[in-house]
Image (cartoon, rainbow, N blue to C red):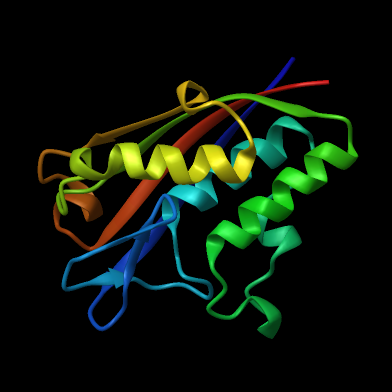
Length: 156
């Protein structure tokens, strides 16, 4: 067994779609990034890559590469899953937390779990997603950005 930790943050901006956990949320803002800026998927990718000692998401999918401009982060996660498979790893479970003041994440957690479990080919009960605020403190509390943490357990 191996474990990895992932963290990501993206700035909140107007005139972009908000994608979290592979799901488009109906709000009036989005996250700034080279890809679709799905902060939750990016944290999960980093956790998986870290557990397998395969560096990080920026190494494999650099923001300097036009191939990844606007890419759907679900595709990045699928590629990470394939990398792990080639190294002989299977995913045990994911535990993730999204930090934001808004939107409310709880109504979307099941849809996110279903989406992510399908991409990673794991049972639904192997993908835990939680949400929290920072009680109006820091950049998250000022609604300047959204962050996500994830831990992944993999087996070989």
